[in-house]
Image 1: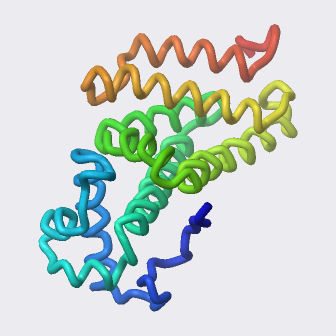
Image 2 (image 1 turned 60 degrees about the vertical axis):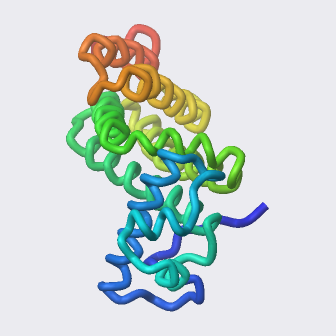
Length: 213
């Protein structure tokens, strides 16, 4: 299984640090790859189609990525970085752990509405690059676990296994987003669905008898 990592700053396949112009070109290629992999699927996608969508020469591709597999894996890393940043920013507005969870969910749903390719590409990763798939979920889970552990230690939420709870919360967000955004073609999750999520998560995190504290 190929190891997939997230570099501190973008580099070329030979490890060279990219210039500002090079980073912009790399970003254009990633955006094009997001479109092509989402529309055509991994096996029908090609480097030619990606470079055409990016508006660059085919030879330019190899200055930034070693292969189709490489650009796919780096796209998963890039989408993961962006969705985690969006969720972190959304959660930051909350005053309590529950409010931060709901803020993070709202940001996740906004991101998936703007980038429906996230779901399609992550599903492809299960077969194209299992290591990328695991990396994606592990990194999201790590942020959840850290925040939940701190909230448990402060007594803000009920004690429990933060890793188990983190994966449960991730499952809620993943499936709700799939049902009410990806499959329904909406740009947001309906308010009544969010309200039901809020009640469920509030009860789950607060513990017995503490829902209304």
